[in-house]
Length: 280
Image 1 (cartoon, rainbow, N blue to C red):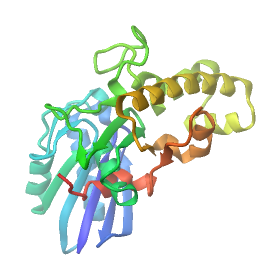
Image 2 (image 1 turned 90 degrees about the vertical axis):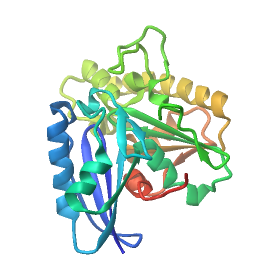
Image 3 (image 1 turned 120 degrees about the vertical axis):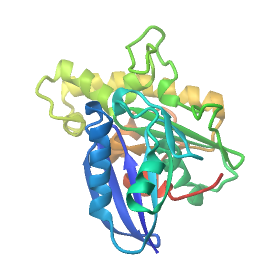
């Protein structure tokens, strides 16, 4: 059976075509999330069109934001996906392709993709490091979803009181210190010609002075964030996925307590693959 799995992030929409559980094709496109809903939809359909083949039986979509997974609706997201709040994702995709479509939050999908490796009887915390910071928690076989599908929004827990403004409207959210976007913005202050986080990590490996300053500050906030998570949930594992994990060895070197930190299996596609996993 052919299946399509999509991950909608603030920067990139990526997708895979699967034959049963084997990836046979992948395709991605920029989200252009700041340009509004019409542009996001256009890019979403572009990715799906490039993966489509005969006999696709289901489309799974992992998306940033608070997702009503029962109805496939984004009930809230920040302006990383401008205009996306209220978008009936499953309905529109299903109408366009006449194929059953299921939708869930991206961090929850990433977490669901890991359950087969860790077991549903564990307490697991997923952190996705991308344009923003996503979070999801599994406890006693259940995803913590919250009354408005806003449970475990770890990226919008306040890390620094009265700190940096977040596009969710609060100040000092973890996302404003630990996301790829935040890390890049801070690094640009000391390294004006920086081309991206990948280059920052490369400079850090060469012991570049400014890169070391940026990463030292990042490590300070990361360790506070992780300690808070341990205090709240006492997890068996804290699993990392998302863009920053391409340099997982560097991330791990910045963490004081490492025993419970794990890299997601199939980290690049964790959100995509988890969109097709149904556990509740």
